[in-house]
Amino acid sequence: MFNALVLTQQEKRTLATIEQLDECQLPEGEVLVAVDYSSLNYKDGLAITGKGKIIRQFPMVPGIDLAGTVLESQDPRYQTGDQVVLTGWGVGENHWGGMAQKARLKADWLVPLAQGLSSKKSMMIGTAGFTAMLCVQALLDANIKPDQGEILVTGASGGVGSVAVTLLANLGYHVAAVTGRVAENGPLLEKLGAKRIIDRSEFEQPARPLEKQIWAGAIDTVGSKILAKVLAQMDYNSTVAACGLAGGFDLPTTVMPFILRNVRLQGVDSVACPAEKRIAAWNNLAKLLPDYYFEQASHEITLEQAPQYAEAITNGQITGRVVIKL
Image (cartoon, rainbow, N blue to C red; front, side):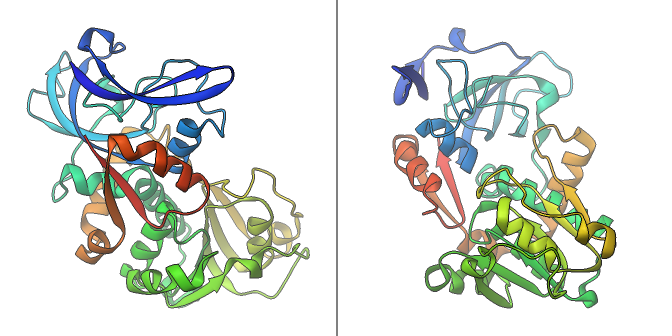
């Protein structure tokens, strides 16, 4: 028997309770993992609170991330005792996820824990940090160099944003960080490497088709009118890596930035990212994230606290990363 956070639905309300489960209740998969840590992402918050239509089949164990140790494996790639990490692939949405002491998973979904990372550190990174690395890689692939100008990061105090700020600063970029809580989060963002802190309100007014050129590159985690504003302010031949919709999934923009300034809007998906790209991203995270990131940008909770923190993260009240010790 083991503990798990189980989501059920009653009268269209999502209920979250700690339950004891048996291994025989776990879904199919070639690898049984003892989960050391999971993490709380914005998507997890939507699932646990029921504020987003993330889960359509109940009961469900949430948790789109997990890190732990292989207990049993029917796949030759993994042996008992191997340390592994999982992010994405619909786990925690349509396959029981990481907010449980055990998980049974498909081998294709797992990657080995990167050298230099512990289970806890990997979850301090989690889907958010993994996505941030993919966004940074998109700017590198677009040949955006540090001497070309400032890089903007929206939603900078969130999980993706805080890792993106840290990675970009460590690569030598001049980072401008946008947050809705400047007084509260500004000092942390500066510690993570941001050179300039900008209040989110500056990006909430409707964008003109084109505005003053400011940014050599950008990572957007918000979407909607904020992304539209960012696009209108991009330099000629610049790139925006877009990975989130915390502000909405609409995009009230025009074709003007794309056809007159040669701006590239690069979408970034972490859920179905192929294994080779995943492993490279995790190895880069292990190399690039400095010790001070792990000291500053995360706090640890218990499984029992997950519903409370899920409510907070959906209300924009969480700074950095939240890891769950199983």
